[in-house]
Structure formats: structure tokens, C-alpha cells
Amino acid sequence: MNKPDVSQIMERNAELAGEIVRLKRRRGAIILAHNYQRGEVQDLADFVGDSLELSQNASKTDAEVIVFCGVHFMAETASILCPDKKVLLPDINADCPMANMITAESLIAKKREVPDAAVVCYINSSADVKAESDVCCTSANAVKVIESLETDKVLFVPDQYLGHYISTKVDKEMILWPGFCPTHVKIQAENIIDKKVEHPGAKVIVHPECRPEVIALADEVLSTGGMCRFARQTDAKVIIVGTEVGIIHRLSKENPDKKFIAASQKAVCPNMKKITLEKVLWALQDMAPEVRVTEDIRVRARRAVDKMLEIGRVDPKIASLS
Ligand code: SF4
Image (cartoon, rainbow, N blue to C red):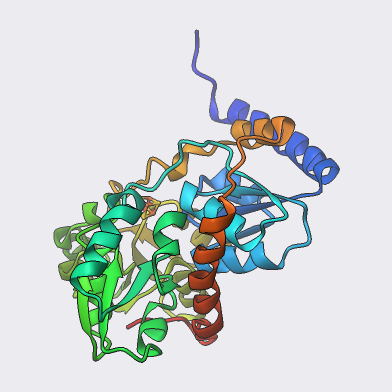
């Protein structure tokens, strides 16, 4: 059997998109997509953004159904914020390996070792872990959230690299959980150095989940939402981007006069790519798979998320962490 060519794929995607939009209206659904989703999924979404923007949108929407094109912890966060809505995750196996590097049980054990530390969990964590934390944060608001805490000692989970980056920005003792994002650690310092040689004068923006030696080479350290704002505002015409490659789709679409270069083509999150147009359609047809957080966990996790939403508003200028 011959492989379908690009025009056939585009035709099929347009058909699927049409069916999804019709069914979405009938179901009273909204489609939210993370910046790392496949281009055709981003193009279909009602809103594309980073974890913070998506959670804020989930909390504000009037839609009865949220189709979450992202990974499991993001759909859980939507369920935490919107218990009366049905939250669908088109592929229930779209999970975050970094979020799975910590469990509620292991966190409880660590808390016993450092009872005087405030527990701050990155939003990339399960609802169970959020329920055991004092406050949540995203990469866009982490510094602001931690600076706002009264305690001088912080147990930060689960991303050691984001935690390390924050520790260079705040005057607090930071105890770091040894988790990491398997996608962002694939971006190496040599990748940035090589790309800078190939594109002299280019600006380098990287995500704080990257290794410290990569961050040290960056002009700006930004959440994905911050990267989108930076791209619109900068005069630079060539930008080297150190994060998951899916964001290049949005950056290029919104800034056609600028060139965006992935720091490494290896930085692909296989879990983010599990969501396809077919699976979005099937989710709307079957109204499944649903992600729902149990009430006792939801109430405790919500406290940590609400505290973040209260104190961690993104700097409207640029959400720059550097
Ligand atoms: S890019 Fe990294 S942190 Fe984000 S979902 Fe994938 S594995 Fe998790």
C-alpha cells in the first residue's frame, strides 16, 4: 500500500477538523491545547497556551465539556478547578514521566525529614502530589510564588532543573526533588553553541526545565507562554528555541516574518504527541476517556492551585524569569 502524500493528509485533517467542530458545538465543549501539541491539534483548539494559561482558561470557561489536548496532570488540574465539568483527555495514556517521578507517599516521607519547609510543587505533578503540597507553581510564576512565601526553606518538587533555576533567583534555601523532564534534558549545551555559530546574532530563549549549562547560554529563560510573548515583542529576526519542538508551529504561525530554530530536534515529548485529531474526534463521540479527581484529593489539591492563582499572576510585560 502506498503511503498517503501530504495533500491527502491535509485533506483528511480538514475533514476531521470539520467533524470535530460540528460535534464540539453539539456537545457544548471547548478544546484546550498545550503549546507542545501537534500543529493540526493546536490549529483546531479554542485556546492554545502554557500550563498556567490553560488552567486559568479551564477555570473561567462556561463550557460543560473540556477536551484537554495535553497530558494527564493538565486534565487533572482542569478537573480540580472545574468539578462540575466533564474533562476529556483524548488519549488516557498521555502522561508526564516527570510528574511520575514523585508519588504522594514518597512526598509524605520527605516532608517528615524537613517539617519546617514549605512544599512547592510544579504544576507538572499528579493531583495526589498537589494535595500534599502547600502551593503550586508553573514555570511562568515559580519565582513570584516562592518569593511570596513567608518561610525561608522550600521543598521543591518534582523538577530539579526548574528548582535549581529558581534557587538562583530567590534568597531561600531550596531542597530539590531529583526529578527531570526527559524531553528537555535532551537539549545539550553543544546544541546551543552549534546553533549560535550557524546563526550569529540570533537570540536564544530556553525553558527553565533545561539543564543549568543550557540555561547559562540563553538570552532569556521563559515559560512557553513567555516565549510566545517574547517572540511578538523582540526585534530579533532569528530566534533559537530551547524547548519541546511543538512550540515552533505556533511561534512561526504568529510571527511569519521571523525565523525560529529548534535548539535540538531530539526535544520531542512523545506523550504530548499521543493526541491526534482522530483521538479528539473519538473523545467527543464517546465522551471518554474522562479524567476526574476524587473529591477528597480535589479539595486538598485545589487549595494549592488556588493559592498559586491568587499570588502567582504572570508579569503582564513578558513573564520573563531571567
Ligand atoms: S515535555 Fe517534559 S514535562 Fe512536559 S509533558 Fe513532556 S515529559 Fe512532561
